[in-house]
Image (cartoon, rainbow, N blue to C red; front, side, top):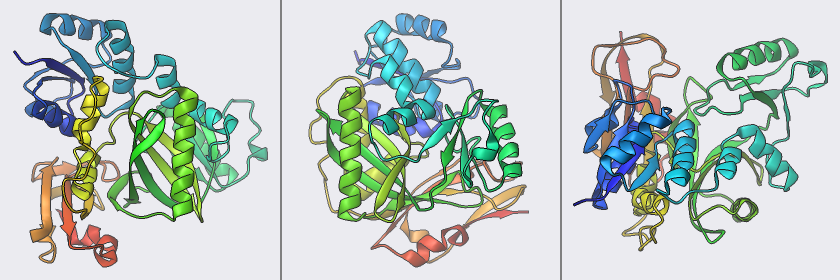
Length: 384
């Protein structure tokens, strides 16, 4: 009989873990009470249950005789998984206090500043904070949300007051962070015995919503910048005694200096694991599953072929309206290696700034800045 894995999630963002666990021979059960969760169509069984309902999850674990727990692609899912895995002894995760620190943006920033890890300076927001003393521009951020929710750059006192009010509608806790101009990148690594054993560096681009990543593709950093990032990650890993496994960071690179702005120990969303796998010819998702369940890796992160240049593109509209079709330019239509549609044709787009229509991967013979710069025209959702 197959051993069972329960994933606290079931959205399209969890499909890479679902498929990887199945390929490793597990019977996969997913959780999630949203009707639009596509991951449920890929798992062997699913429960339409809120993954924040820990008492119900414990009942399912007992009823199904679940062997391991995995987090989906979300902060609450990750923290719930860590808590339950320690209570039920069903996985290999950081201590709960460490997990909560890492996934609280302000607590993690405090840790970085105290340990001389490169990050923008910041201040926790309280009602008695004198906004007249805040150096502008400044970034307003919730402490516990991902995907750019509630984030806003304020350039003057009036916009700062509005940004704070808006952020407080989405989160009970917010902080203000020094605004640093630079290149936004993702630094995705695997930690082994406190050292970076594998690393992938990608550029993150945005479209109409500058706080929501749409396109991603591999890039190279200056050797001194890459080395600084590696040393900072290893400092974090050793200071917090992080268990072996994945660690994903968002970083602003200004000149040669990398500033860590966000981190997570759950898989990055929107099929980012596939980007790593397509580009580096590794089995990243399998490695994530094995590390979460405490199994030793076996060459999963060793390249199985030549490196490729691949663009992961989240298709989004430039306005609200009726989505009818996606027009892919003939110059790249034969280069599509993966596509998943998130919206059916003739669906109404109500909020184009956050609604994704599809996720498409393009493999190119080599890097093409022209295609990168024009990707939103080359992959064009028709809105009427």
